[in-house]
Every structure is written in C-alpha cells, then in structure tokens.
Amino acid sequence: MAGKRRVRVKRVYEEPSADDGARVLVDRLWPRGVSKEKADLDLWLRDVAPSTELRKWYGHDPEKFDEFAKRYRAELEDADHAEALGRLRELADKGPLTLLTASKAVDISEAAVLGKLLSA
Image (cartoon, rainbow, N blue to C red):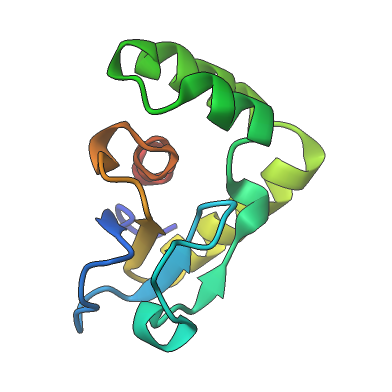
C-alpha cells in the first residue's frame, strides 16, 4: 500500500459526492426508503456487517459501543467476514472509499468500526 488509505463514513441517505470514490453499503439490511438508483452504490457488502445476534444485542446503545466494537472486530476474523473485509481493503488501496450505513449515529455504527480498521 502506497500511503494512507482515505476512508470516510456517511449515511446512505446523504447525497453522493464526486470525491466519494467507491461507495459501499456495509449494512446487512437494505435501508428503508432508498432506491438502488438513489443509493448510487458500487457494492452492497452484507457479509462484512455484524451478525444479526450482535446487531440486536447492541441496538445502537452508546454505552455498549466499546463492547460492540470489540465483539465486531472478533467477528471480522471469521472466514466470511474476513473475506469481505479483504474486499474493502482492496477497494481502499485503489483509492477513496466511502462506507455507507443507514445508522442515524454514524460515529457509533459498524461503518465507524470498519472505517477505523481500514484507515489504520
């Protein structure tokens, strides 16, 4: 990798911008009220999302975020997650990458955890 990866995290409901680079939805579920055209995705990578069990346990409770991030990073080491994470790394190595989520609290979402991992 030549240089630092440029990874940003945005809500899928925000308008796409010219400097987004590759736009990847990292949620397991399709966001409500968003057409595929409006989302303007390059990829929907469901396999990188947290398990249904972890997502339900977390419930976007800010007090659980640190534990969620720890459990999610552990999940990212299993075969399916690791392959999907590798795909994100490849995209980030090629140029700007925007991770998209429907979460209202982007800073405590799985996309934020992924963004930090990919930027490191």
